[in-house]
Figure 1: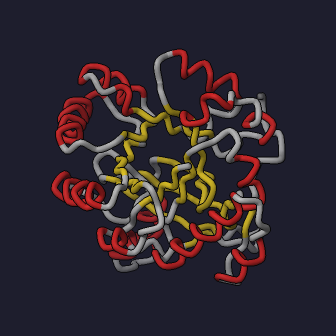
Figure 2: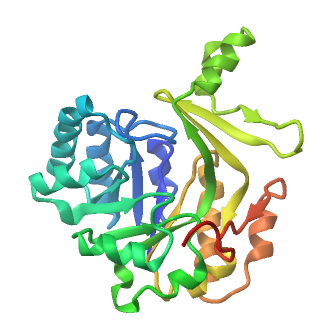
Length: 288
């Protein structure tokens, strides 16, 4: 089993000693992150990880335009030289560049809507992608159809705020401009959206021209962890919007849940202001 946590700040490394891997972002090639890790910081993380038997992954989840591909290739070359353990990618440009660099085995397909059933996943594996992250709306029945012998090839996001909407419309910037607010609000990650017909509050961020709106409830697969662990090896915790000490405790609770322990109430007791959802893992959605 592998537990991977998205890292919000460099100093989080020293707290998260109970995980197996770190997921880092860079503002030119990633979005939905807290701190942007330049290549020098990534090298520092890799040095720390090597000493502590951890892995380092880099999130490359942007959809890239043609004029950005040369810079993407340059950055990926730097990552290869830094000996990072893998790239979490969404755009197939990353996979094609990785093939040019001879490191396609480091590619981990990470798409939030494409990978919704076992057929999709097996098809992409036939293209040579060695590791795949199940989409947020993949049903438990489809997960259970994944071949157990390939368990090490599969991962899933098991905890975190899940994006519901993404757009190149500058939602936060326009709101700040309309209401004459301090421009620092754009980077604060403190704004939430409330619809007229609902009481729920939806977190909103804007990064590098991409606006994201997140579910009002936190995705948690804690009740399914033992079952999921039969077919899935990598469990990802998205720590965006959370304190690192809270995430560390969450990881410990989920580890107990994997053994079959009922940890639902223990998770709720960490912060009673947080509401949880198990998303679509037990609900069929769309065309499957």
